[in-house]
Amino acid sequence: MAILPIVIYPDPRLEQVSEEVTEINDEIRALVADMVETCYAADGVGLAAVQIGALKRIFVLDPTFAGGSKTDPALVFINPKIEATEGKIKEEEGCLSLPGVFIPVERFAKTRVSATNLAGERFELEGTGLLSRAFQHELDHLDGHLTIEKIGGIRRKLALRKLRTPEEE
Ligand code: NI
Image (cartoon, rainbow, N blue to C red; front, side, top):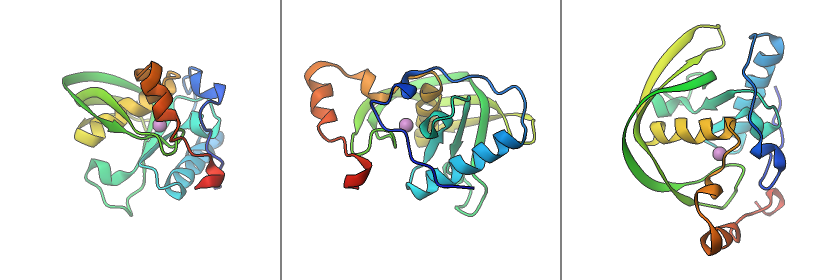
C-alpha cells in the first residue's frame, strides 16, 4: 500500500472516461488499497481511481458515510451504476482534485447505486444527503466530469482563484 500523489486540475486525465473493470485480480486489489490509503491521508471522504491516475471505474468512500465507524473498511464501488434517484438539492461541494475550491452543485437528494465489491459480488446501497452527493460526485469522476464544469464564465474564474497547489497546503 502506498500514499500516491493526487491528480490535480487541470490534468487532462481528469477529463477521461474510465474503463470498466473486467476482473478483480491482485492489480485491482492493490489499486484499491492505494486509493484508500491516499484518500485517508488527504483527509478526503471519497476518491475515484482516476484521481491517482488509474482510469478504472472504481471509487472508495469513507465508511462513516454509510452509518459505519471510522475503523470499518472503506466502501469500495467497482463498476458502479445509478439505479434510482429522487429529489434535488444544491450544496457546495469540494474535491481532492480541486483543493481549496468549493462549487455549488445540484444533485439528487436520494440515490441508489449498484456496484461490485472486492469479493466480486454485486450489491446495492441507497444514500441520502452527503452519501447521495458523494455517489454522484465520484460517478462523475469516472465519466471525466468535475464540479468546476457546472459553473461557467466569471464564476468559474473566481472559484479557480482559490485553487491551491499541493505544495501550498
Ligand atoms: Ni472529486
